[in-house]
Length: 219
View 1: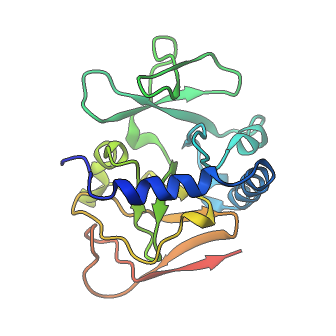
View 2: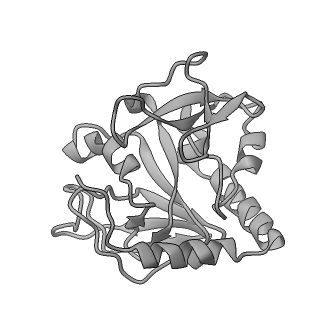
View 3: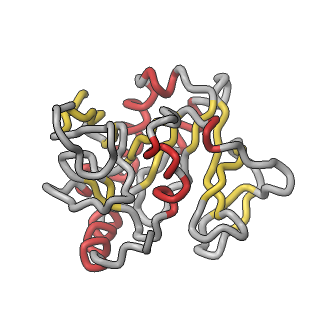
């Protein structure tokens, strides 16, 4: 799989859209997204949850972290995997843990102290993204880190973790053209609510066995 370099101008425009949200809008969107997530059975029933620390205008999941502090769910953050090109580990994380920046300046847990979890043991992964479309295809930063790390889901033998995109509504597009290696999202949440795919008989664009023709919004 090669890095996606086809849409740098589109990515830049979408990143600028989310950065243009003022602090009040950012706070309101983040609080709304976290409220939606806290009603989601996938999250409430999960034991191991992968999430991210928001940067560059991404939805801030700190309200969710605080709400889960005294619940049984265990949280994990992505870590660039050493010696593995463009792949991720997920290491245990608790709010307040000591973190250090990776080569992209994104804070990561220190895996020397807390070893990462096998990705197949994650129940749910909350994924940041740059854009999404009406069929729940995801436009990431272009490096393919999530697609490579969770490529085992395309084989059809594994059904977890569920992949849940997190975005602002302003990052929505009408149509994306996914690559053969692009992973489909199981659902997506914005400040408006939760988008779930609608099934259809026939071929799916990207992932065998996960057929999507559109998405319904649940608020």
